[in-house]
Length: 68
Ligand SMILES: [Zn+2]
Image (cartoon, rainbow, N blue to C red; front, side, top):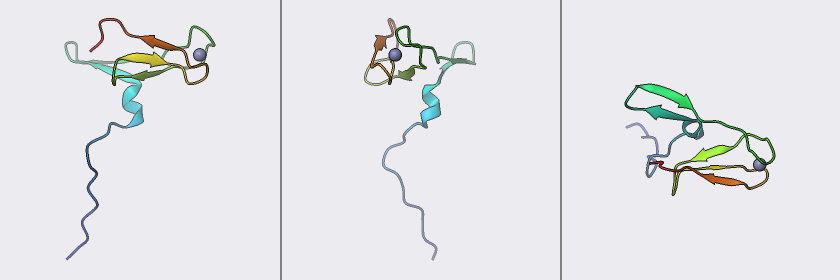
Protein backbone atom coordinates (compact mmCIF):
# COMPACT_ATOMS: atom_id res chain seq x y z
CA UNK A 1 0.00 0.00 0.00
CA UNK A 2 1.33 3.39 -0.89
CA UNK A 3 1.07 6.52 1.10
CA UNK A 4 -1.52 8.92 -0.21
CA UNK A 5 -0.56 12.57 -0.27
CA UNK A 6 -2.12 14.64 2.43
CA UNK A 7 -5.19 16.35 1.18
CA UNK A 8 -5.41 20.05 1.75
CA UNK A 9 -8.54 21.35 3.29
CA UNK A 10 -10.13 23.81 0.94
CA UNK A 11 -8.60 24.87 -2.31
CA UNK A 12 -6.56 28.01 -2.24
CA UNK A 13 -5.68 29.89 -5.37
CA UNK A 14 -2.02 30.44 -6.04
CA UNK A 15 -0.75 33.92 -5.37
CA UNK A 16 -0.30 34.53 -9.06
CA UNK A 17 -4.04 34.22 -9.51
CA UNK A 18 -4.45 37.60 -7.91
CA UNK A 19 -2.36 39.25 -10.57
CA UNK A 20 -4.84 38.93 -13.36
CA UNK A 21 -8.53 38.76 -14.01
CA UNK A 22 -10.17 36.31 -16.36
CA UNK A 23 -12.81 37.88 -18.53
CA UNK A 24 -15.40 35.17 -19.04
CA UNK A 25 -17.32 37.15 -21.63
CA UNK A 26 -14.35 37.79 -23.88
CA UNK A 27 -12.25 34.81 -22.84
CA UNK A 28 -9.21 36.90 -22.16
CA UNK A 29 -6.96 37.52 -19.22
CA UNK A 30 -6.36 41.05 -18.16
CA UNK A 31 -3.44 41.84 -15.94
CA UNK A 32 -4.51 44.05 -13.13
CA UNK A 33 -1.23 45.03 -11.65
CA UNK A 34 -1.00 48.72 -11.24
CA UNK A 35 1.11 51.17 -9.37
CA UNK A 36 0.18 52.90 -6.18
CA UNK A 37 -0.93 56.45 -6.79
CA UNK A 38 0.58 57.46 -3.49
CA UNK A 39 4.05 55.91 -3.38
CA UNK A 40 4.43 54.34 -6.83
CA UNK A 41 5.05 50.73 -5.81
CA UNK A 42 3.14 47.77 -7.26
CA UNK A 43 -0.21 47.19 -5.67
CA UNK A 44 -1.80 43.81 -4.99
CA UNK A 45 -5.34 42.94 -5.96
CA UNK A 46 -7.53 41.09 -3.48
CA UNK A 47 -10.96 39.67 -4.22
CA UNK A 48 -11.98 38.82 -0.67
CA UNK A 49 -13.76 40.00 1.28
CA UNK A 50 -14.16 42.91 -1.10
CA UNK A 51 -12.43 43.56 -4.43
CA UNK A 52 -9.73 46.08 -3.78
CA UNK A 53 -6.22 47.17 -4.53
CA UNK A 54 -3.82 47.29 -1.63
CA UNK A 55 -0.36 48.73 -1.40
CA UNK A 56 1.81 46.79 1.03
CA UNK A 57 4.30 49.62 1.23
CA UNK A 58 2.25 52.58 2.34
CA UNK A 59 -0.92 50.64 3.23
CA UNK A 60 -3.00 52.56 0.73
CA UNK A 61 -6.22 50.74 -0.18
CA UNK A 62 -8.40 51.41 -3.20
CA UNK A 63 -11.73 49.65 -3.37
CA UNK A 64 -12.96 48.64 -6.81
CA UNK A 65 -16.32 50.06 -7.68
CA UNK A 66 -18.79 47.68 -9.25
CA UNK A 67 -16.49 44.70 -8.72
CA UNK A 68 -17.69 41.12 -8.16
ZN1 LIG B 1 1.72 52.88 -1.78
